Image 1 (cartoon, helix red, strand yellow):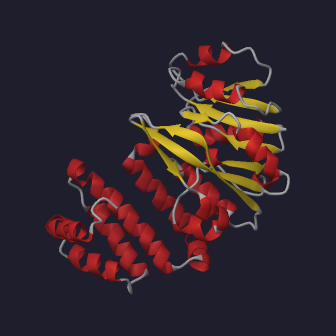
Image 2: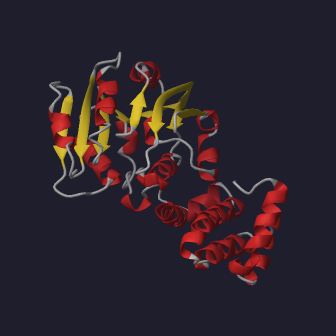
Image 3: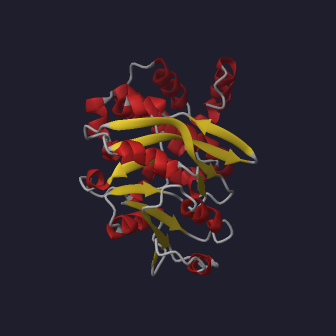
Length: 304
């Protein structure tokens, strides 16, 4: 049996499309666990308007966040196979059927996904993660919870699989934890869910993203170094610095920018990029940012 875990918070206006895409699946042997994370809108009424015995409704007594809500859903699930969906997602009608047809011989099934923003849809190819999971997941975030179908006994091996401190990058933390096991992974070269980006998506909060990435890297630092490289860790630190650069014009605070470029240099001082940023940051980001942006423009990497 499949357990589908759906955390939701104040999305009553779009929640119907998410619930409907589950109930319309061609594969029907599942339970849908909906965790209402103390919504203040019409969420409860939307959920209770459905008369389907496959729906298990849970309501948090206070707002706990999406990671904690997934944990509650996981603890309450009775299926031996787990699937995840968020309240701004829509599934292909055959998602469960296609992934279920492979899961018997694998620990996890991974598929492509799409992102819909401003009526534009972009498909994300997950093949590298399907073929070289550990190598790729330590290099960069990639799949979302919604991309996979996984056997519950795999998640049972993880201590704190839905780490609240890693939000909004909890997907990456989860997959890093999974990469520590020798998993048999099947890959489906097909987009089976669409993430519909709204202006209130919490994962678009850059400050939260930077703090979560820093937490994840520090949490798994020894693992990164042992199974990837210090160069890879330095790349992650530079990525965090770039996120703080995007926030600079709002805060005019360059402390975190300087801090993470310096961390990148200290852990791997042999990179030309790290040396470049280290020299410029020595004079402070405020003074150096024009030169940094000029070099990026020349190299065509100003938006990377």
